[in-house]
Length: 244
Image (cartoon, rainbow, N blue to C red; front, side, top):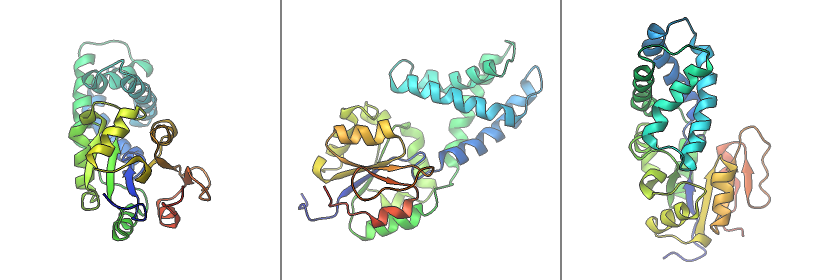
């Protein structure tokens, strides 16, 4: 194992941290809505009406999934069906099939979008050049998160992509962190979690004995002490990861 003076091991969340989930998702949703949903709805609805409703229902469904109340297979069509319900659409023949088709299309299309947050590639390149071992630790699905990393150009910088789907535990569960740590052959006192979700990424990491960086583009940075807060990825290059 490396000594305590070696560069820290950095574990990045993926969605809304490196990969611009909201932008990529909205582009895919608009395409899916116009091509698949709109022609089959009993009354006209615009994509601009559908997307914010879907996003709200998606968050609720993901919370239920994280808490183990629904499965991955249930989540994919459920968020689309609930969005149609919230839009005030009456039940119609084919609604369930349409939700299934939209859920399938979303998983097939969204991961291939490649928008990243500003500076993502340059920051990853610089951190790797400084000697940091870097890993992805994400609550996403195994079959889609690897596609995102590969297609967006992030793959060369990371030694592993660890998904909750494969680990069997979702952040902030401590087993998600301990299993990721074991796969990376690292230690809690060397690990730093970087992510956008305060509960899952920051509090989960701290409870596991790691240090953490909270990425929140809407808030001013605070980098004097851990847990650090950053509003732009290049600020990572200013942090002293050996600081305890």
